Length: 307
Length: 248
Image (cartoon, rainbow over all chains, first blue to last red; front, side):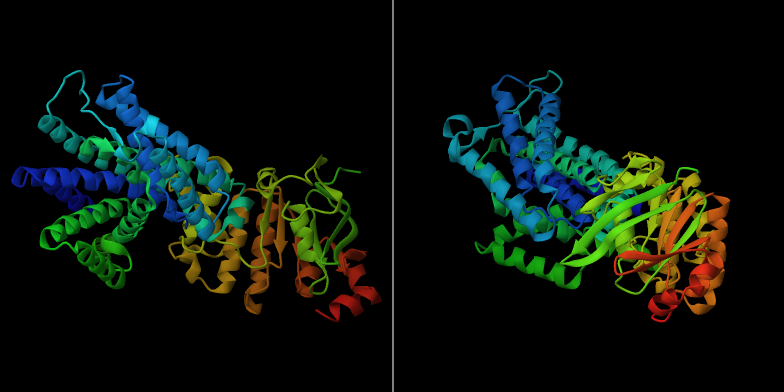
């Protein structure tokens, strides 16, 4: 039943841009943020809140810009290399941060992400400072494309990756390593006494979550066509945590549901008033107060009552 | 004489000036059921912490099969075949009982996969068999947080057994278990230990349990061993009657 819902949802998303072409950009960006929020949600499993994951989002997007400038012009190569860059950065940063818990983990992620922000903003000669860098349109399997064609391909590629990566992350969370990750939240002592190295469980999760944020960042970079230091700013990280909480930390679809919901509310609110933040804020409060398990909790609960 | 499975030599540790272990030496032979008794706060749990790398001694050493494990991490000692059940059950409270068991089974051999699910048919069968053995078959789908304390205690022991240890350290296995269930539990547990040839060291407050199941008893007081011997001998010792049995 849940699979039927998911397939229906993906089909609806796939056809929306045919009805309203302006939605294509909004949806691509929502999926990109969904990947990053999924990265945050993975760590939430272990009870760890990262208020810094936008750094990996930005590292990957800058990675695409640098690689493109260095002459790499193929979409697939750029995606793979930039995600690997984010994962590697995640492994290095994670090696230090996974020793910390609770507020210390959250704040240290924030601190490190702001170091990245400062580097992106101040190293003008390398990063273009606050102007950022252009992300040119790459070729797809050797074919040079115009912008509308590329954006269409990017949208459907993102959608496909959302399904495939989503399934892969679901597998991971259901694997012994995924269960061990959830167990970090409840009992680290027992994990150690089972002979399970908590640090390794967390480092794998952290690296994976950085890679997910990186995938989102690369897609966002392509969609926007430019990467700026604000990609790494702490409010962007906070935004990702909001999406993860909004979607519900229970399942993989939650992150994407949260991202789509927030982007849609944002897009609608902007057309109504300049004070669109008010509407987005009110929507958030409503979800948090009335749906403690997030938007995904609604679907899951309905399923529960049917059984 | 056979080489002991676990040997502690001249352990010293103190917390804020309180001597929790003051020159303690002991050894456990393969196949033994060694009980440790003593008043509250005398350092019995600290001994288990010392033997499992959770607390480091100020001086002295711990050996497993002759290998010095004093400086090893708890997880390394666990992988060498020493499992522990806790006085306060240490469970994954948000997960189902069966998942607690399957994670313990996976920890032994199949943790490092991100692709295969935790729940495989073989692993589930093994987990269910262990749960049935310890009397938790009906609880297997429950979230472990919702179990009554006695059952949490049993699950904690079952999780330790799932590691297929050579040496099991039990910290008051029967505390929190109702008086009626105490002996049936010990019968099952001891049966399982004998069948699997697991050596056990248990800290225990219930003298009837100690008398019935221990091969040998160590009497612990204020950080040192004050008496040692078979249950019959130890319980006849006037010092033991005064310091331990009287208090307990």
